[in-house]
Length: 499
Image (cartoon, rainbow, N blue to C red; front, side):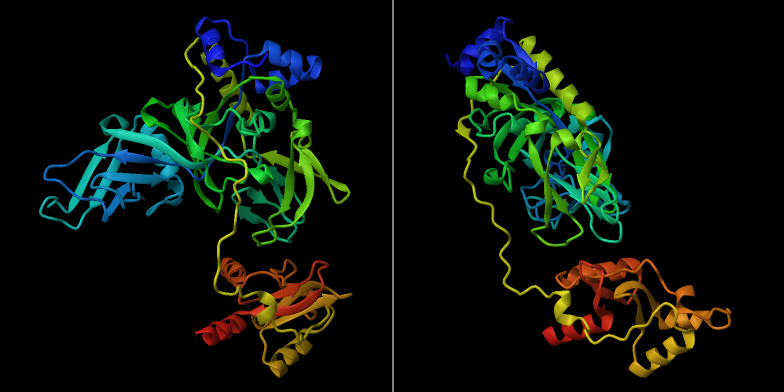
C-alpha cells in the first residue's frame, strides 16, 4: 500500500522509521527488488558536496548612526564587492565575487566561510548621502552574530546530473571543470552518482517548494526550481535557502578553481520519502545505471561535442575508455563528504530531529532551456584568417626563411612536414638567432605551437594570444593540417571595419 509523508513523519516521531542512505538502498533493491524495498524502507537520504558557483548570501547589517544608504552605493566585505542594489543596509554577497586586492585567491565564498567560522569581517561602505541617510562612508568589523539576518540563498544548486569533461586540444586549458590536460590527457566529472539528491526522484514527485533539506550543515528549504533547470535533459536544478547562522563551516567552504575563479563548496542533502514501489525503484538505481555525457571542453562553443556516454560506475573506477585507450579521471564532487552528509541526515531522522515536509509546489518537469538571444553575428576565425599561406619545412635554412618573411611582408612562418604543422618561426626568432651558429629552422622553431580553429570565436583567440604574449596563431583542422593563419593585424582590421 502507498504511504504518505504524514504517516512516515509519525513513524519518525515514534522512532520506528526505517532510514537508509542512497547507497544502502541500491544494495537492498538489488538483492530484494523494489516492491520489498518499498514495503520496508520509509526514507532514503542523499548527499552531495561540490563547487556550486551559483551561491551567495543576503546580509542585513542594521542601521548605523547616523544612517547610511548603501543601496545604490558600494559595499565591500574583506575587500570583496557585494551587490547593493537593494535597501539601505541589505546586500547580496555572491560566491564568485573576487577580492579587489587578492584577485582569485579570495572571494565571496571565502567571506561566507569566514562568517560561519565566527571570524571578523571588515565592512567598507559608501553611499551618496540623502536627508534621511546623511552618512556617506563607513568602515567597521562584523561577525555573523552581529548581523540581523544572514540567509544563504543559492539560485542554482545540485544538478540532477552534470557532465564529464576532457580536452582534445594540444594545450592545457583551465575551466570550471578543473585543469584539463592536452590531447585527452585526463577527464574530470561532477556529481555524486546515486547519492546525488535529484537522481533519487527524477520525476520530482516529492521535491519542490518547501521541501526541507540538509544545507551547509544546518536546515534549509527548496525555494523552487533552480536557474537553468532543464529536466528534459536530466539536468534539473533547485534554488535553496537557509539560515547561515545555523550552518557549519565543514559543509560550506570557500575555494578557488585554478585560473577560473572563486566559488563556494556546498554540502547539500535531501531525504526522499519512499511512498511506493515506483519511488523505491528510482531510489534503487545504481551508479552503473546513471549516465552522463563526456564533453570536449577544448571546443569553445555553447554546444560542445559529446564524445560518448559514461556511467558513474565507470567514472568512479578512476579511468575511462576513449579512442581505444584509457585516460585517468577524477571527481570534482567529494564522494567522502557526500557519504558523510547522507549518513548524518540519516542519523538526524532516526533520532527524530529532522521531519520530512511535503512541497507546496512540485518542481516542473517540462521547463525548456534556451540559449542567450544574440542579435549580432558571431565573428569567427574562418572569416578573418589568411588562407594564402607561406610555409617552410623544418630543414629549411634560416637565410631562406628570412628571405620569405621579407619578400611577403609577414612575421609568422608556419613550419610544415608531410602536410602537418610541426612548428612556427617568427621574425623575432630569426633576429635573436643571428650569430648563434644555428642553420636549420628545426633548431630554432617553436614546436609547441599555439593554434586556432576556423569555428572558434575571435574573442576566444584574442584571449589566447594575450595569454601567451604572441601576435598570431596558425589555424589547423581536426587532423592537425594547416588551413590558415590569424594575426593581431587581421583582427585589428576587422574591428576597425566593424566600427
